[in-house]
Image 1 (cartoon, helix red, strand yellow):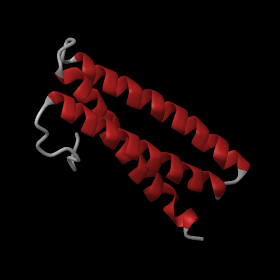
Image 2 (cartoon, rainbow, N blue to C red):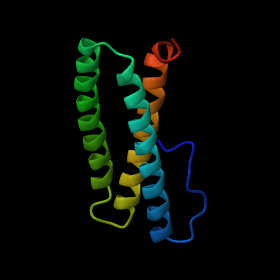
Image 3 (cartoon, rainbow, N blue to C red):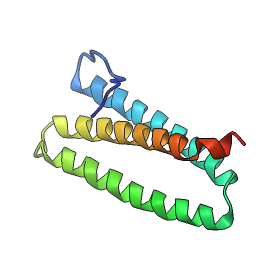
Image 4 (tube, rainbow, N blue to C red):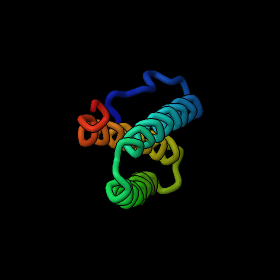
Length: 107
């Protein structure tokens, strides 16, 4: 799920959690940037479709990562897994937006 792994060999769970939190934040910033670029080249009806899709995707992302978190039953692996999940799924969404709308951005 988390390839490429942005957090190689942390020495503690705290370091790992911090690393994945930073990776998640970076992926989120990239997503927001790409999303804004895509919106800027769409017609109003297309922007509305994208907005609906993005809202559904956010729900999917959050539910998926919460489910992964719950696999750890409150253990220390849960928060790290959730942050890693958020980073990975967000990177996937960035790639999807670039693939789907890239040709419109190049016009």
